[in-house]
Image (cartoon, rainbow, N blue to C red; front, side, top):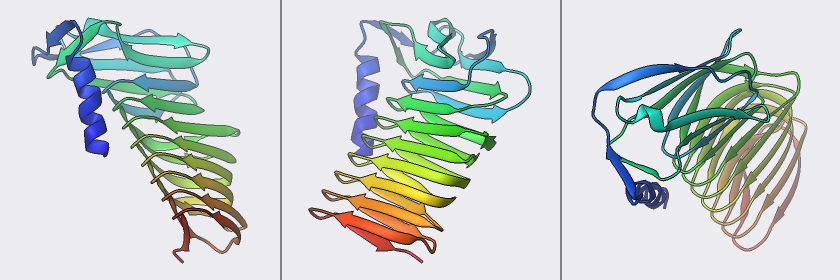
Length: 233
């Protein structure tokens, strides 16, 4: 299913009327974007994120394509997109991001986002994947939320006090290594979630959804259809 969605998004790009083939000559370009705390990625980008004292955005792409990559900040969110009407074949799209603090990451399409090191915050950090995108991150924050739809994947590790997660479609949530005290997780469709809770777990699985949990939490579970909640301790 995920492979089909990736192909679908690729065909959407290829079907654009303004079609370009990457030259194969890869260059980098530094972008002056201003500060931000959120990141939103649309399309087939590969993005690497790390925290650091100075905000920096660097784009890596073919020399005949790079000008069509947009990196703009709106409402404290860095938006990474290709310009409207621009389609590409065999093009290289990669973005390197450094920022003092990241509070949210959203992907759509077939974007692939990886966080190098741990994201730390005194507040909430949110992750949202739609389509066939992927996010991999280590986190340390009192509150974490993850929302996954389509055939995407979110892979989280680290620690938090309160964790809220929702999976729909055929999404795959890998957060068994996120050490959480209180976890509230809902899975519908054919999605799968792996979570941890040491104090309290609320788990709701419907459709053909599956929830697998670790930890010694008090468990409140609800299932419907072919949904399952399973202890992996």
